[in-house]
Image (cartoon, rainbow, N blue to C red; front, side, top):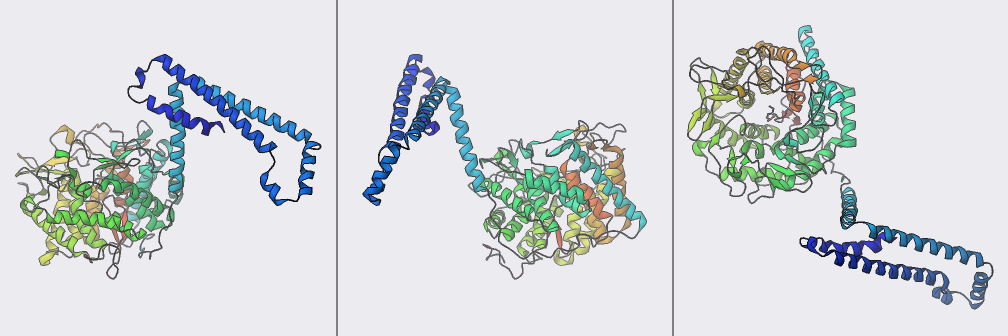
Length: 625
Ligand code: DMJ
């Protein structure tokens, strides 16, 4: 009861605490405190009076409603039988009064800072409670579930292949069990230190990135108990109202992609609901003058900004260009056009821009809508932008022809300006930097072999054979980058210069951090050609990972693939479980597990079903479909 009376009083103190308040003379503060004490006394006396009036004055309404005889009876009752009751009421009032006084005294004994802290805590509690009330998940509109095919198949009849598949499953279990034991709930695992790990892409949060990223792999591999544990953690702990500044791109591809894929595979509503809750938290990132999103957003405040290292405050092509698949699915599942409109706006804006040599620079300023440095890459900073153009077309059941045309044009420019053959006959994809070609290829760029193969069917001028061949050449080059190392694992970047062929030069390019791109390309090439060499190459990589990256607490990256005695980086990346092991597992499964006619894998290897939208119009998409 005393708190409401004190709150306005305390509230009035706040202005005195504003800048300048610190210089108030001490006696003045004392004077204010005694004034308040007197006020409180008056107030509590007044409360006592009200109590008395309430209990002892006759009730007017009763006067009107009841006959006179009953009135007399009531009065008689209170003076004779009610004598004891009056006494106890007086006692109660006295006790309440004393308690109020005591509480008031205690409050006044506290320092200004203590009081301020109390008020702040109360306020935050109210805000939190209100938020919790608001966050009760809204039921989502029912939509037809897309065809979910080939989720539980894939076991091979060949014993040798089956054995390899089982080995990959065992590796997955080791990675998961270690994370379960030492890093549970953290984003990632430090397998040597045997504790949790997180990087700035997830802010300072503990959002269980490995759980969300790994769930669909566990599901496909039939690791049911592990899947159940992960689902339970998500149901009980995955909370996005955290004060964390996260990467919009990473959260989209790992969390939203992971949750959506797991929803489609398992049919469990919780994954869909969580994906939508999280997506809502990303939307403020699009509040920029151009609608090109910030790279990072604070999940609590919605404030966005870009990476400090990006050219001229720019957003990154591979980040704002890798949202389409997940956002189309979000609109499909929720009926909310906002997601679809955001990504289509980005596409429209890019279509209007000039492109140097037909190439897309990696940097675009979200305030001015102008390109930053003219660097173009099919690896880091550019890669999945091209991938999502192709996959937007595939995911729309090949009806999004605008996306296909944009992909074809971009690939044509890339082939003309960035793809070359080395002296030793290896096809590589270099990087365009300020008007010249850097003859260096990243591990990340190796995904492009799979992309070319995936896009071969449907390419213009009957060039399907050409693109499948290009995919095979990239796969070969990337295999060489693995084969020319001591550990038989690929470096982060390798050169084709001054007599060098597919080898890393700088020490800081010699590491392998459990990345998936080379194995991803082997898998696509395997699906399209069934050439046994892709399974062979995949198996070489799996063995090397098991031999050099496996430790008792999980799997770790290594710092130098050219050293026979490498040191560990002590990180088990979440994409190792989401992608590397999933692609390996698929490589040793039959094609009826996740057939590519029905599923499109996002850039983090989370499969999303093809939406047969030919006769459907997404809200806000009239112009496009
Ligand atoms: C993954 O998170 C995704 O594949 C992303 O597109 C880029 N690379 C990492 C893994 O290497």
